[in-house]
Image 1: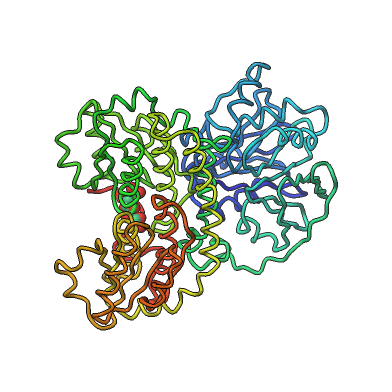
Image 2: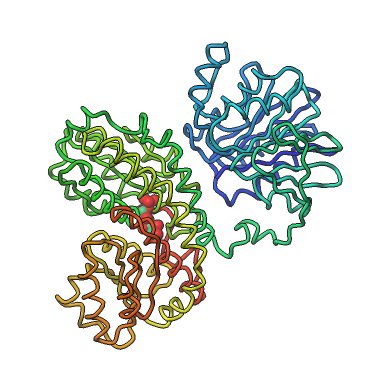
Length: 606
Ligand code: F6R
């Protein structure tokens, strides 16, 4: 996720900004840059790759000045290059901006500014903001920023410098975090607390649409033109825990980031409550021309793909093939130039997934990628790309990437179904309304996670756990079992509930935990029979369900309720308690939650 550090005060800004950016490195980034006002001139230095690439350049040419802005970029618009790195400067060279967030209407603003003679050099939405502010400037930088954010739709935290007001730093935010750090020798603005801790613990958390005018020896906060006061608070966190924003591990932080990730994922794919994939998808004619559609991925991304297959089959009313990339790469005899291959990959660098993609391209097929990493190999080599917009996922166990992969696949299915006429306007609107309700429903589940403690204690004591489900619930069970095994090292076996009696039921013995997912209305009775089967053999039964029937309480030793949603979309909620349970078990067992044994975040080898 991008990081912002800005400073205005009495001492050297470069040193303060670079140390702040170093403290934000944990968030993940792919390029970095800094702008300082030196002798009333704007000096900008940027580099693709690690921060060292930037600091190496600064060694040759240190920047002297006491007001500046810095940024580490996690690419969202345009690949990670020096040109796309922040700060971005207006084409008249007068305004420099760093930005976190997404400007949804950047294309419309860009078209308008192009007509007025502004020029654009990067692929980013941020450069549009620099030019917009320059176009509004009439002697008052704060006013120009205020007028500009009135025109902007989307999320942002911004830090702005201008040679026309060289002693001033302006910062503002909407939905994207930004805090002030108050020091004896100046004021910081940063996207995250760790950037400030070496210099101060006195911080101000800004509200949406606050605009702060920071001078050398004072700062003033405004909201919609009116002066406002915000309390200074003292940060108690250690530097270590501040990196995780107070959470003990990245995994649980990322679990809690899912409401935001879902909102960000929707933002780029929905306009005014309607599906709007723009150039991320194919035309009606192109979709009709595909003789077969394949989906391929690995691990968690494959579990999302299997749900995506169901969604696409519903949308297209024809069979779709989903296969594990490490298998499919050696067994794809029918994939040809008339096929569409959809690949799903958080990292965009998974070796097996890339091998499938490359073979498909060699055969002349079209490839659509769903990935979280802009500029990754999967991104660069595919014909069409949908970004998950989950932000960097640091914990090895995938959580927010899975839920945004699911959502991206649902949105793709909706787009295809609408274009082909399976779904009408009302169907699409209703589906989008359901998607927009997901962040609130996830928050509801997360409010209650302490109730999972006794269940986690039970799971942690047993060497094996079963996960059952029918239909789409089986796909949710697969993801739940994978989460548990990878971070708890407990043997977790998922299976279609009806398959149990064909052999594996022999393993059910007194006390063995069996988690059953029950969200698919037509299959509820069948799943209940399966719970009875294992209960009769002494299993400790846990039901995860959105059904309100009391039958579950009578039958199950523990019932975990999730909010109701259409059957097809249920996995995006059913996975939440399963992620949290796996996390809690791993903590109870004292494992290295974020870096489990034998696993790597990105599996680039075969
Ligand atoms: C499990 C997990 C892995 C990945 C798999 C694919 O929590 O993270 O199963 O899902 O290695 O990785 P990507 O999505 O990067 O292709």
